[in-house]
Length: 225
Length: 225
DNA sequence: GCATTTCGTTACCTAATTGTGACAATGATG
DNA sequence: CATCATTGTCACAATTAGGTAACGAAATGC
View (cartoon, rainbow over the protein chains, first blue to last red):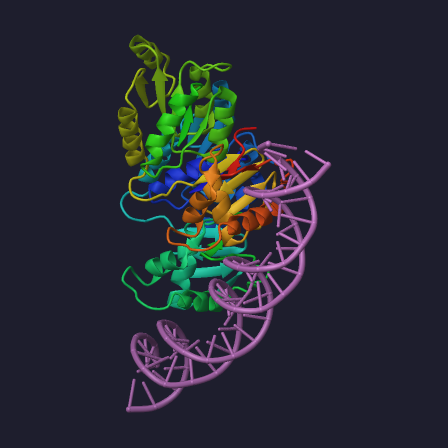
């Protein structure tokens, strides 16, 4: 899943909703990024706002179509736009007019996904935070364009952080997610693994690009770019 | 949670009730503010009075619906209004007619919340007081558009104040919230931390924008703009 | 079964945080 | 205006939290 819209609150909302469905949702606010991300993340469905700054939604859709056949759902401000778009044969698979209820959008997305996977072929689960990319399906981590080798614990730890970027996670929470509920021992263990993790992704604690220390609590992954 | 109603005592009552449920409740008395706050705080549920001064409740709901899919519970004065509203397809999720018992309202809100999070998906907890914004999920504080770095104690202290803006908190109350019930020592400690906090958020004690001194009691966060 | 990797613990170092006491400033009271 | 209570500010030492390295044990792979 990729959502392309320049209105941040709307994007966050849609993300939240789709995530509850167990979907992996990435987002961006501008056209060129969107094209890039479709190429990189190979989403099954793209929700695309027509009125984007920089590159027109129509143009974005065309470009995507040159190399991908993901499903595209267009967001338009006016209903009569839809006819024009269909006339232009942009190649979108569905249209939703603003204002829409996110609930409605979610329903349409689900419909697309049902179409896309006749049975199996689960969507790739990928998360991104800046230059960092975590693929939980392949259990791979990429920094810029090179792969980073992590130990199981490190991978789990990073995953725990990247599932909710920007949310501070206490050491206890992280331990529960990575080591399990009933783990007993010094919580300082988390610090050690965070330290190892940081070294591998070239993250300086004093000036972190990714993992921020939340004093007195734990850690969080930096949100956005 | 956001409660929108122009009758202050009613709002306080509802707040009190919902807070006992451990909910994070913000409130406002007018329409435009309500729309703004929904955008900023992204509440899961909004309780909205139909008869608001300035902007009609119906209009407020419509505007909210253009960008958010939070649950909206409408408060109406007359039962027969409900039919009309449903006819208008305003997009509210539930209706409660005045006069209502707070307990009833709380039950409905809880029902909404149950629906909203099939399992987890914790709500992002944000509070606002004028130019100041506290995000307890990310553990971040923003003043206008720049982030303010606080120590754990300062953060807890500010959080304690902003959960109930406009309510005077005694030093003892603050100590209990921040340091815990059984803390022993000089209450003067609070003053020192308030002082540090004020410096960081550029708040002059002689002319405070945010933290007001309540002589003989403690402190309070200024209410509204 | 041996070599290698990974893991949890411990110890140590540094820097941030915190509580305290002294003292200045402010506001209330008469 | 004088006095007292209350609040604001500052500096400082003790403590704590977090980062890092090292090490033996356990797990893994061959």
